Length: 110
Image (cartoon, one colour):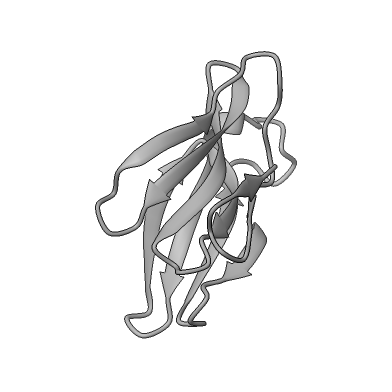
């Protein structure tokens, strides 16, 4: 488990998790998952597979994360209300990682 982050309203927590052998001998980037924990319901929700480094939007309606696709990491945004995912940046020559939202939610750096 890594990359824990609070939702803007402090009611949820998002994190990245990897499953596999304890010695990482079977490591595959596709095994990273972005998971949301809701403190009220005490439930986990799988948001994305092959994904890590998640960040909430300032209003809490979306999550940006690094998504593993075709041997590369791209930035994706998931709308938490609709479940729609869209790629923000998809460049096969770069490893896009660690997204962070601007306070007004209009920009993302990575």
